[in-house]
Image (spheres, rainbow, N blue to C red):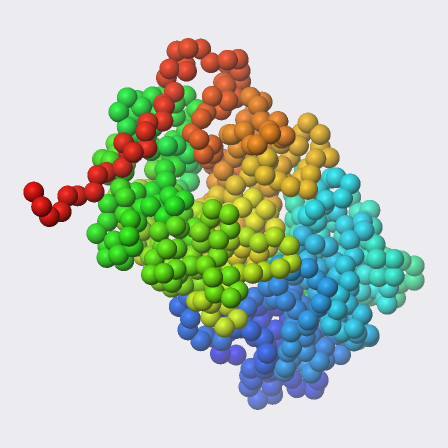
Length: 637
């Protein structure tokens, strides 16, 4: 097989007497002639990935999961957001319509019935299980009994990472984060847990994924991403099991498939994108605070340093390309200066960053990427996201530029290099996403989208290109839910793919922003479990990137989540229990009275009101107009 050293083989299907079908993760399917040692690429119809630098290397989109009929003729592949199906042994594939699956649903697993070609199951990241009875044309949802956060009817459900049939009605589903294995009925459209204690580790155990399930001879073969495998008897009558099959399944971690008369076992491995670089260890061990730039000026500076010491923090996050598209560091780059009003530096910004670094403070330059008023207006909305029909897209006051555009990528890379040249220790990409939409209707249109390109492919392309130009560590901010579910085609943020190209992932784990009663079943432990479960899930999905979440240090709206002095300790206890040492406190108003009281109480120093001396020692925001450099005077006297 050409380029075999780069391939991850996920299955091999014998085709007697002399051939073998090999399925790879991202390099397609091959038919091998074992006598003449020839390899023929088949798999017509599987979409190629469209990722920078856009060379045609024969890579497909990743296969998350797949299912093969016992005769090897029917093959179903679960790719990002879609299922592809072949009825001729993998030579030609077509996308299944699966009408009835909700928009933006992430598909993680698939199972085709061993005998009935019309029957298949689809597992999703947060939406339950779907069954199709017409060969994939339509699909109906199975939700009853699905585990989710402990409330009566959770909005977001457990990941379904593995599926298999037992007969025309019964099936089994393997969950993604510690909820074990469930038995389901198609006729009743319900699932129920199998009571195997070591398969159920939610919420406090190791939230491993069940990645493979096969039903053979009255037994369920279970594999996980922890190299743990188990065979359990299911149902009544059991046939004989070849000892070689048992030995291979339990003892051969390198085994990808096992073929027996009348059955085919597929030992699915967890998919993680290969990292393009090791995380930069300079970014490790950073605990910080989002601050107003005015905290660094005049009499505020010594107060800021004292505040950071009091809180035990060693990093600050400062807007250096803000939510309106203003670049707050000097730059003469023509790409940036050509956009009217884009370069608006803070006063003494280079000297200020140097001063912070000399005092041992790690400076994280926050850069808002694809929400950008200045670039949105540029050249008569040339680079704006559009509505279908061509009008510039606007979501409330937010103005978004097209994340598929290479010019938009290059513009943001130029801004990042300017921030790096100003002395920042790290570039933190925020709003590295597409504008979110509500409901099933998508009114967004993107002028620069390549044919069939996915949103996640555009964001990965930007990160890959940025990593070629930026030498300091790179971090990305993600919506909280985007870091605990693999859910890429709503706004493009697929944590597994993005994390492979950056040093740090910073999800916004704000309990006030979790909807659907997330962790509400834990009562007064809800804040703790929101942070704990989010961190344990995100660590699994981030694939080796440094996890440094933003945690809440602010009131939100009516304060229904009960932000208070104890809130800080609940969050920090959860981080520690999850093994997460790095974090950032967020308060967009830079108002930290509750945070100071919470940290005092957490350290056993009392959480009462601040003294007048303590209040006077907190930095105060200065008028914003005084923070911006005056533009240079040109012409005249």
